[in-house]
Structures are given as C-alpha cells and as structure tokens.
Length: 476
Image 1 (cartoon, rainbow, N blue to C red):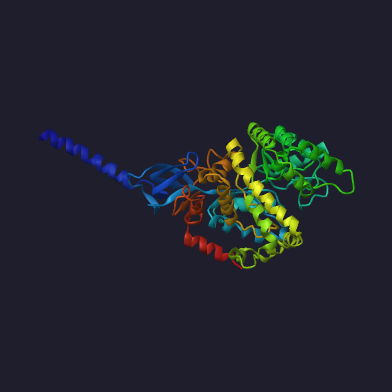
Image 2 (spheres, one colour):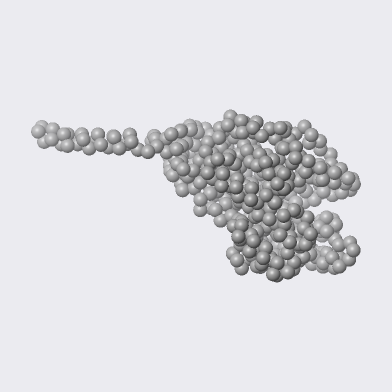
C-alpha cells in the first residue's frame, strides 16, 4: 500500500504536467472536421477527415478521432472538400485606365471556388505583381496569380504591350526582358509572328529552361512546335489543323500566301481543315503531344459562347452587374463582328464547336494532358470570371470526360504544369490551404461545384455570406 502511495505521489505531478502541456498547446489557425476529402488524383473520397491549418498551410490530415485545439473550427459533416480550382487561361489587360476594373474581377474568381489563375498575357504586368504580393500578404482578397507578363509576337502585334520579335537577337532580348521580370512562363502569340520566329522562340526558351505556351501561326505545324519543346497549346485551332490529312499542303498554302497581298489567316483555312479531318492524323498528333509532354487548353466554353453570340442577348446576364462598364465597353468589337457574320459562317462555327468537343475525350484517352481554362477577361465578351471556368468543366464532362478527369484539368494538372504540385493542386498535409467546401459530391455531378459552402484561400476562410459581401462590394 505504501508503494502504491509513493507511485501515485510521483505520477500525479507528471499527469498534471501533461495536462498543462496539452492545455497550453498552441492552437491551429483553423481545423476542419468530419470532411469528405476528394482525392483528385485517384478519384476516391476519403470520409471523416480532419484538416489542421496554420499560416496558410495544411499541417495535418487525418481521420477525425480526436479534438485539435483551434482558433476556428468548421464542422464539415456531410460536406465535400476539394482543392481550390485553377483557371489556366485568364487575361488581365486593357491598359492603365482599366487597372482598377481588372483588380475588381478578383473576388469573382474566389466566389466560384477558383483559388489560382494563370494570366495568359496582357499589359498590366506591374499591377499583377503588386496584387500578387498584396494577396500573399493578406491585404487583398484574390486567387494566387501566375503570369506570362507581356506576350511575344511579331512586328506591329495586335495586342498592346507585346514584345515584338523577328530576328534571333530580338528573341534573346525579349526573353532577357521576361526573365528580368521573373515571369512564370512565356506566352507566344500569332497575330504577326513568323513561322521562323515562333519556332526559334520556343527553342531559345527551351535552352533557358523556360516553360512556353502559345497561339500558333498557321504557317507552322503543331508537331514541329511540340518537337521544339512547346509545353502547351492554347485553344483547339492548332490541334485541329494537325488532325487534317492535308496539314502539310494547308501549311504550305499559308506560307505561300504570306508573300501576296491577301495572306491566308486561320479562319480562312478552317473550312478546309474541317473537311479534311482524319482520325489517323489525329492519333499521330496526340502521340506526339504525349511523347513531348505538350499540354492542351481546350477552352470549349468561349468557343461555344462566341458561336452563339450572334443570337444571344447578354444584356440581362446576372453577372454583368459585376463587370466594370469600362470592361463591358471592350466587348463591343467581338459583338459587332458576331452580328455581322453571315448565316453560313454562324452555322459553320457551331459545326466547328461540335468537332472541337469531340477532340477532347479522344485526347484524354490518348494520354494528352488537358488544362482547364476559361479565357475570361477584357475584350472576351461575356466570358465572366469564375462561372466561365465552371462552365468549361461542365462542357468537358458533356464532351465525355468523367467528373474526376475534369477536376484534374482544373487542379493537379495545372499545378504540375506550373511546377507547383509539391505544394498545391491536391488536399494533403504540407500543401497550401487553398480549398473549397461543397454541399454535394462533385464526382457524382460536376455541377455540384456551383454549390459552394466555404472557400479557403491562403488559409483565409470565406463563407458563402463573406463571398456575397465581396461581390456586392464590386457590383455596379
């Protein structure tokens, strides 16, 4: 009995010390309990999970079996947790007079579960870098921003702020400039760039270890660009040309026309490309893209929207109220062009959209990496930030992808492309706390992405009510 008394006497202070240690444990900033975590890599749902978050990072991910001290706790019982979505093709542009209007688009992304965007070239690069730092510091609500900075194009380029190149020396100077800016990748555009300059830019960037994406001049082929090291092709016009049985002769005709008063552009030759589509040619280019790890950004949503633009009245769109009138004014050029189209052109654009849609599941099955992008931003009429990416994912599923494949295109695929997958793109311990809590399972129905309960960006919690207030603050 005396021995037991001595043991208890010695043990009680230790027990008290242990209790005090537990009570004084530094709490996590946020703990989410009982969540159904969607693993976008495997397509599996892990039920009953607890996440502990501090300083914008997921510190723990485990079965909900104990209580963790936290400054704030979210009970996610019955909810589904996914990584924040990535929009891999957006634009911030329009010049200094549209800087504030562009900045006010940021809440639209968060309100739709998009915690990361890839700016695909514009003329607001200094502003973007400033926003990025403010977002990281918690002084501005918005998604993580990756940017190409100014586009590389040819002489007298269409888009303002482009770096115009023609000679090898000019290409090197342009890349020097982009590296000084510390951009995240290089975007090449095709408004006036020559075949030689386009391909040489890819090669020069490849030697520097820079990631490249682009719109291709039809004077070049996607196969040779991919072989040079092109990391991604934006939109499907260029993949589609490579699916033609007459690609070589079409390319040669475009090259020959450049020496005439009426050079052939992309839209002039698309009907011929459409008529000469060949499944064998399609299979060949898909193998090339897979071999060279060249990704594709389909942008089905904007293709469909523009094909329907001549006959659709967007004046009563709910989201139009959140777009600055100055940005709305940039819609006029595309709208006027759409209304001037002939009936034959309108019909062909819809046929083209259907063909583009059919390419998507074939590329997925072949192993081509797909990246989900909306092409939202100034000048792209009625392609509203946020909802347009959700529309893109819905169209990918309608095309034949599974919901998890569509989610991969908007999460882990984007993170891998931008070499950020070691800390982003999935829900796991050590990753950034960029998350979306949904009311329903998106693997069962991709439209469940529209039923957002909570968005967490950089560890900051935005409830549905918070998101509504953010939108009201930028409403016109």
